[in-house]
Amino acid sequence: MASVFSRIVKGELPAAKVYEDGLTLAFLDINPASRGHTLVICKEEYPDFLTMPPELVAAVARTSQVVARAIKAALQPDGFNIIQNNGAAAGQVVFHYHVHIIPRWEGDHAVRGWRPGTAVHDELHATAALISAQLGKEQA
Ligand code: 5GP
Image 1 (cartoon, protein in one colour):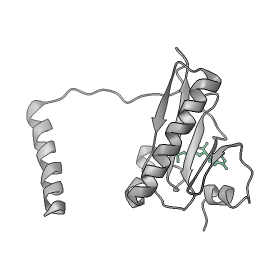
Image 2 (tube, rainbow, N blue to C red):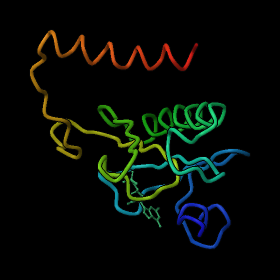
Image 3 (tube, rainbow, N blue to C red):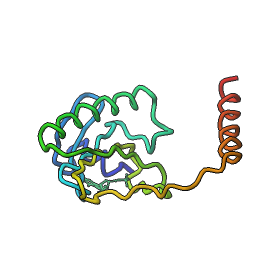
């Protein structure tokens, strides 16, 4: 079944669109974390970052930068977050790859960050070794 975002692409559902090109579409989030909270999607439906062709990741990144510049100029936030959730455990609700641009104003508490832990030197290096060994296998 088509995702809710594919239905927006097809014009079956309304959206407050801000930008569109051949590969990507940007529109305001229906439950915004802040004024101007925008979603940038790939028009073609892929569930998440890992399933996206790299050239489409690049297209979404390009559009995200164009739109973020426009948000900065139009709404003059103090900053903004770029957030991209993958998997239910990471808070993903719509399984159609998308990037959030969330304008931020000093003291707005619009987005809760992660809780910083404490690095244990040996564990950091053991984890890095696992990941880099995997990358080594993939590149062999
Ligand atoms: P996720 O948690 O998957 O990264 O974020 C999905 C986002 O899509 C949520 O912030 C949610 O408010 C937004 N959303 C879900 N359905 C719709 C919709 O029909 N229209 C718009 N504009 N946003 C939607």
